[in-house]
Image (cartoon, rainbow, N blue to C red; front, side, top):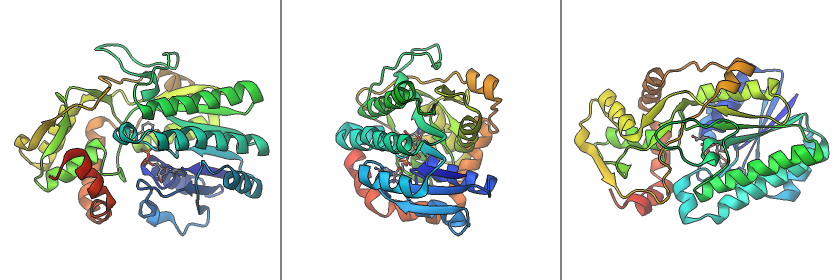
Length: 336
Ligand code: NAD
């Protein structure tokens, strides 16, 4: 069985590649990644020599390259994690989001259709549903109403995946997940950013009033959900993935400070992000009842494990924050 994972050098993709390489030694797992600022092969150091793992560098939006790769390798399954994924970056530079997230998905769908894969799985996000008020949950039937260029590009991709199933009969699934956290999370995202700043006694920048709510899911629980959908998901179906762990951003930051024994005076409220969605919360009943998915982590056990991982893997994140990321951070938040 040959599996193509795109974006396997990123945060969730690398956790998924590791999970699959270890769980299914009989499968060959290909990791296709362009290695943008977010891609880091250091994430996969521990499995790079495994006989069932292969890395290919390339752009999912390069149609010719993708077509040739698919013809040569004849993949059975394709899982698309590759994306431009950071909302703030989509606000300053939307174009690359359309290119990678929409054109890239289209190129993969065409190549998957041409060789007749057993399944194409699109890794999507709850952000395609827009924002919630104080109550309610996103279900798979919630209308799509993206608010940022990032979520609009992910929505466009989801609609293409749906259309390829309806029009050409390509076997597909879409998973829509809430915010992930865990090991190998790039330091520009909320949880690692706060852990690393707190360790350096630097200010912790929080958008607006800090009361935006996200539904946090440990990345290993996400990987397990994707594995289930890949093997057991019904053709053409969408599955929401979420951990029932709603937390405000300020709660998250206070939890981190407490665990690291740092003062709350490090918190600094900064100007809110434009179009900042207030609340996301996922109803994952379909995944639980149809496919028997159960998350392994609560937020309390997961955040503890994550903070410990960052404490034990300083070299990994120090290498990242010393480089290009530093410039980006300065352009977003000033020189802190
Ligand atoms: P990430 O930014 O950490 O990783 C993205 C990876 O894609 C990187 O390795 C990058 O090099 C690669 N990539 C980017 N453009 C590419 C291209 N043109 N061709 C090939 N590779 C390319 O992202 P992530 O947080 O791991 O997210 C993975 C997927 O999960 C994305 O599709 C994202 O939309 C979705 N998702 C993420 C979250 C989250 O909380 N992180 C939640 C829900 C859904």
